Length: 486
Figure 1: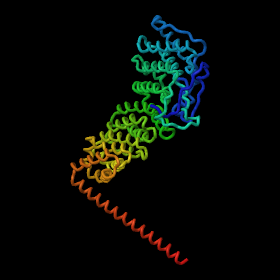
Figure 2 (figure 1 turned 60 degrees about the vertical axis):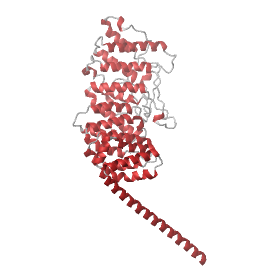
Figure 3 (figure 1 turned 90 degrees about the vertical axis):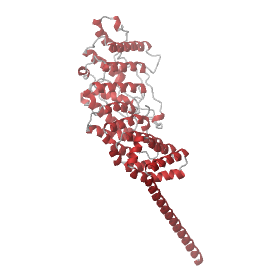
Figure 4 (figure 1 turned 135 degrees about the horizontal axis):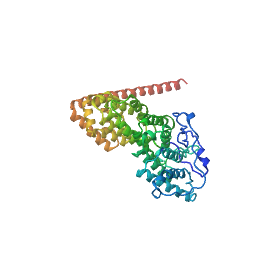
């Protein structure tokens, strides 16, 4: 997903002090290095409990033997030594710099990943702590602002922006792979691991979702999903932090790179909600998910958002009225492409809606659909008419036709007589025929009322025209009398 959050990767240098530099931008707080450091952008961790950031090592880097080349008794010690080698932060902006050191670190990372993946030996608590430290040094870094921030450049459409790829990805990918293998490993004891993968670690992991590199966000999505599944103690905290990220995106910045990935995780989480649904989850739907329809960049993450919304309705059909009214609240006024997306989502929601909930929102719903039917943008009108291709929606409409048809009949007549697009004209005729087959008497009654309304409107227009003519004549006569007097 492109678009938004306003951060790119900083360059790394051999200077160990570089890991100590923390830059805060208006768009969000920068992430600090270290296992227990708290994000500057979220007040969920006590800053008084935060130790100093971890510094990468200094001095020369020497190659180490492979795990397969040492006896079992030496493997834990070699594991620690390889972790220390991997704490070196190298400059990837200059491809000719630190070539030897980059290859040594890459080989060490690959060997660590293979060691964890193979499960050839259970690593000690000390090794686990050192591994999380090494991972923290590598992945937790400041994400500097996007090109439009602090540069005076014009803000571009998030959908049109090119992602900024992380230059150190050859190493970073292996670090993420190591973390993923550690989390999913059957040898990982959650009682031990939660001491190192704590709330602070998870918080900074969530901060990294603002990375512009889609490869990094994909790894983060997989890792966070696995953490949510394995560490039950972190579940409420993860939901709360995601909630706060959404709030800030909706009401402050409207720019964030990882909304789509976070919604993908939530789609799976919502699917696992137990029934009856907790009030906390319903509030999350109303206060966070539905307002996500508001930002201009909704097209970037709409598919994932629509899936989450539909999951709520499928889980608890009583939420259908709340969801439909929420969609109507944030319905776009001038953005036709957003309207097409909303109509598609509306169809998915209606497909999971039962008759009682449909009746509660019929009037406001079809007032909006009527406006869509008469849209001069043919794709909006066409997408609204396609709702009648869905058998479940047609059955709901048929049960409530005495309410629905009087609301939309005028829109049908307007399309049939004056819409510029032939496809919209033809579809409207077909939908009107469906109502004729449902209830011919109702259609005739609506036709009669429409004709009367048109006749009255014509009389009013003629009377208005006559009044204006009389006023013009009177004004002309008064002007002529004034001229005679002079």
